[in-house]
Image (cartoon, one colour):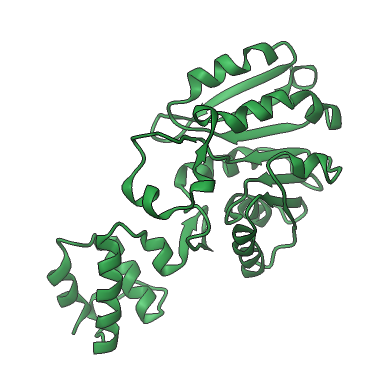
Length: 276
């Protein structure tokens, strides 16, 4: 059967871009050129239908194709890691504004490693450290390091412990922590059913890791007074984060930034003594 015919038969079930990604995955091709003219064997059609049934049940396409495009590159992903989101690319863009030559960058809650690796791909002379609490997750991280031939040190640690337990002296921290409230009703069905809860949900109404970060600011800036911290948060969390940060404003500056959809998405913390 020709791919065009297969799409027409199923276009009410699968989106065009999803169909194309699926065919490319099944046929093991990297280009969409003449994709709809391709013929699929009975075995390939059977495989397509198997994947289609998964998609009908909200199974993420990225976990089928084992890849997700993020900041200029395709990263390997599986169900052990959160699927990288476009808004997280803003963390990469923010870090790339700095001179990163010979600087130590630590990607905390690194997941697939896409943020840290994307930065390192643009700055080969930076020193990259990657950390996550999940052993299974770090297998994916290491696979992506190998995929892009990137050197980095990888740690299995809980949040900021990677710094304190290993006596690291970071110049930049980039963090995309779990920040969804456990009882959040707005989370998508596909995300809730299939993505790892460890990477999604946080106690204290979603603010657990931000509260830990704020409480440890003195320890962090004692290690390096020029430290820059860049951290993602949920689109509806800015107001509470400002309240939680209030008592730290005497020493530290927090700057909130929006994503391309106009939602508040990440903050940057610096030392007032250094950057004011």
